[in-house]
Length: 163
Length: 241
Image 1 (cartoon, rainbow over the protein chains, first blue to last red):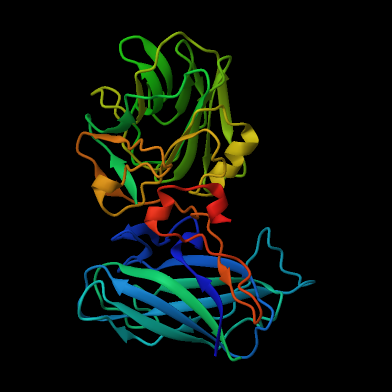
Image 2: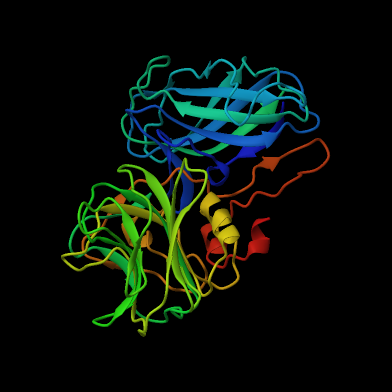
């Protein structure tokens, strides 16, 4: 496996509503995902040279206050190739959702954990594609059980490929 | 995060080392929780004399105005529960202001003249019992310069200032510790004073403005700007890109 992109809170982008709060936890930049409302953020990039094979996402997170329960994350890829007919002015073309496992949070708030999401649905991303990564917490547990209370702080996200 | 201003003593401001009233720009992201007639959003003024303001209309409080010390000029009707980037500036000849929501494609602007006063207060919100706002505010930036329309378009895009020349103060207000939420990150040590009983609020849906780290087989193509806080205190544009 090879690391292809690293995304941080300081390069996240946000929809106009239902987005995680950009804040600091002990002076560390974090994205605070709510425990009751599904919130989403994005990262935009160009698929780097060498990208190959199946993709996985590794999300480094810590809980603000929870010491028990589970969390669930969801990731989506939108990949647009030169010549594609996606009207970026008015449309999005995210592939189907990729769910994480329902994951038990660390027993101490602030301790980090890493959740791996296999990006089975990666919108046929290829080298040089313009792409966006969408990350959400499934706070309402509609697809992945998420029972932990309080904010989930995302500290960083790593995109790996099969090389 | 942002800072919640919602009571009669609440404001963020400074009273010393202020920019010239004839060459300044102040800007912030503002979220209106309710309409309050005559509520002050942005201002530079001299106590008991006059100043420049963005304040809401005196009837329903839903329409911010640019006030040049003599005449209010209306901006746009502000929707509740919506983030707006708002600015107030003067070049010594004209005083102007603007507002633009997160989904709008352009600023609504208004312009007036100038008036005589010697500024001794610069505030986001105001602590006067009759003029306080019910807002959350974040991403505050002040320059010792009159920014152009094109520059303000850029500043609308990110928390991170695009123009570092003449940057007087930069208080992003993202810290989860209230006492640190009014810190100045410009390197100029101009922390905002917190008036009243403030609380933490939400942050606007605005990117910080950093770049992702791409890793190819040969080189790390782009350096991440996600620097330690200590480095951000002494920020220089070149350090980020």
